[in-house]
Image (tube, rainbow, N blue to C red):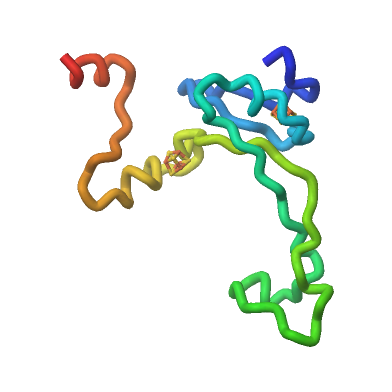
Length: 113
Ligand code: SF4
Ligand code: SF4
């Protein structure tokens, strides 16, 4: 996308569009996406949580105010079709009614005919 100065938006060989790590959170893609697909997510800085809290998701101790997330810069996020998950899209696998599915454009056109 030409408005993404760090060139963080990419398309994989299978067609999935994803946001790379060079995103600086400027918000241009979110503002310009006509479908509302891209959102800005504030990355939390958990660097001050101790190892056990981080590994096991334990609550921060009441003694440690520094364990609170410190905020951080925003990053653009969007569905990337779970492109790196071999088992396939997590939403498809977890949908109890089978309503979520992934189909190629050709298959999709066949389904709606
Ligand atoms: S928010 Fe990130 S991905 Fe979106 S245009 Fe800005 S740098 Fe690029
Ligand atoms: S779980 Fe579904 S909606 Fe979420 S990234 Fe994966 S494919 Fe996209």
